[in-house]
Amino acid sequence: MFLRNYWYVGAYSDEVTCEPLGRVLLGEPVVLYRTEAGAPVALEDRCAHRLLPLSMGKVIGDAIQCHYHALEFDGTGACVRIPGQERIPPQMKVKSYPVVERDNCVFVWMGDAKDADESKVPEIFGKLCQDGWSATKVHCHVEGNYQLVIDNLLDLSHLATVHASTVGSMHVADMANVETERDGDRVKVSRWTMDVPAAKTYQQFGNYESNIDRWQISEFFPPSYFRINNGSAVAGTGAREGTGEKPWDFWVCHGITPSTQDSTHYFWHLGHRLWTDNMADVEEFYEQCYGVVGEDIAVFEAQQKTINLDPAAPMREIGYDAGPLLARQIIDRLLEEEAAQKSGKAA
Image 1 (cartoon, rainbow, N blue to C red):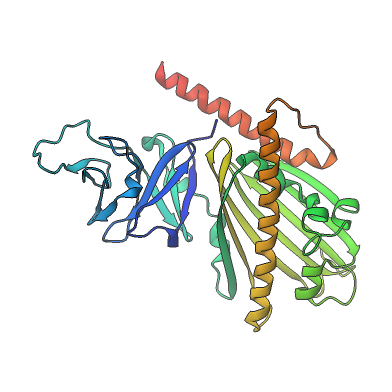
Image 2: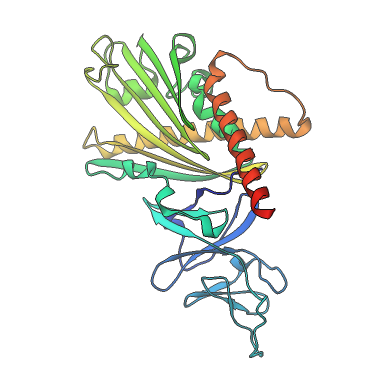
């Protein structure tokens, strides 16, 4: 089950072109493309005639043409042409999804179209598009349930082992002071690791010659968005008060869009103030971060394979699970509320 009355990232802006792009979002096949004016369109990726994916076809003007029998559908989902036939039956149409393009993302509303509210488009990605900042992004298709990704991002103790060669060290698991807060349906987990040696990435790009105070602040927003600030400063110089010496930090915003029960679209977007004019160093930093993403995905996919062998096997909890448990509770409650609202409308 998925929360539907929300905006989800369907694609990065540069992924959506005049060539059809097929995606499965929340278990529904969706095709994305651009009109001649450049506006993004999202339609059901299934021709109303013989159900071939429209993403196998081509864009003609503002419409998309099915590869099978050349039926054409406009941006509203209406069939506007059937070769050799003047009359178009009213039922010959496909579902159209509301879309909004903002902050380098194309957001798709997966619930009832009449409930789509553009004011609810998440604005977390805009932070990464500031003057004087540099950014990079990755879209990955993960063979794992989306809640495994949420668990991961609210419990960063896994850096100690999964990412030991770059951003991790055992200190972030053994010596962290972890604070979990809830504000309505948002969860914030703050992890502070004080007076410890810098992990490789922090040493290399923060240029530390002494121990550091390190922070990792993860914020979860329903249905499945994250904003995470990672940073450090010279130990004992006021990092928690924001006055630490030689501060070095970066932000990662995550859009986690369920594809199926066992797969997820993972939109990862990193941004930071430029700390150097040497872009080779910046690119090396990005390469290390891409490696971190790959290491996480390997964990998600291995978890999912194990889960599939015995879906009833329990997950038991440890002390660092307060954040992930809160997020799961919030999602479960929101799912119940959506189901009750849908049932009430049906009645």
